[in-house]
Length: 302
Figure 1 (cartoon, rainbow, N blue to C red):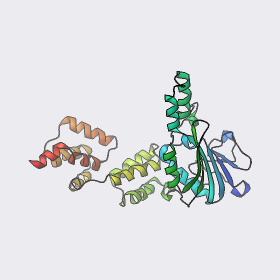
Figure 2: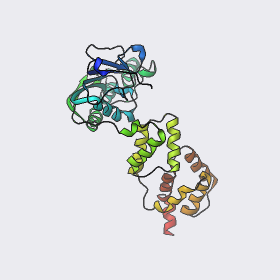
Figure 3: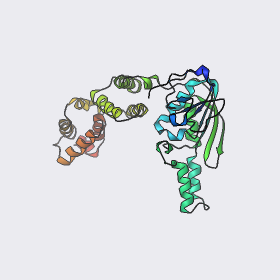
Figure 4: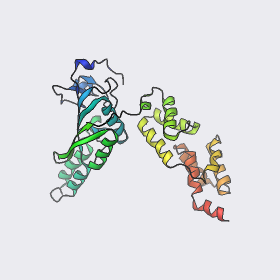
């Protein structure tokens, strides 16, 4: 979204993020919806209009659960970026374990009671911003806060179904700079180097460019590439890496059967692997799958 011209010096050095109608005196009130008439209209996951290490406190009450799970860490890192050393972060988020225990409770065994608990877990869903896309336990929230450079000062239950946390900035831990690269192609090149220590390959580059064009978040790309690194092809798969250079998917599938399984491909196999490739599965992952199959192992023993 287009960022407003904004002078932080003209506003308080405390932030109330995702303020909605809960605008507070002594705070710079921030919300993505101009309908609420905040001091700054901005996406709380990207506070590019605000300077590094400037703010003394951030309030983010009933907010983090509305963001996708894969954006939680980078968002906490963005909030870390704008806080001054030792700055305070105050959060309130749903407690998944507490809500699930309430669903099981003997005093909550009517449909209306359970619907009310489910609403706390999933959001009212009256409009776009009312959906909960994430929930937390004390362990998951504490872990992500630590990864984002925060140290917890107080953690307690609140309102019968939430986790209330006060933490301070332990170290400066901004989000990866490549998330802010303007061009998607350049982002992908940097992402491959960052996650896999190599340039992008044509297959992977085209796949992720297509996904980014259809709304996939950059954080999700980084997670997917990191998973590729942690599930690197085995030594058995490496000799077949040359198959990835075959231009057409159908020819690639035929070569899989011919070179790895030492037989002709059958039609169900051709249809299955072709559909997976069309759906975005990576060629090297399919090679890895075949070289760990029982059929391949048996062929090696013959």
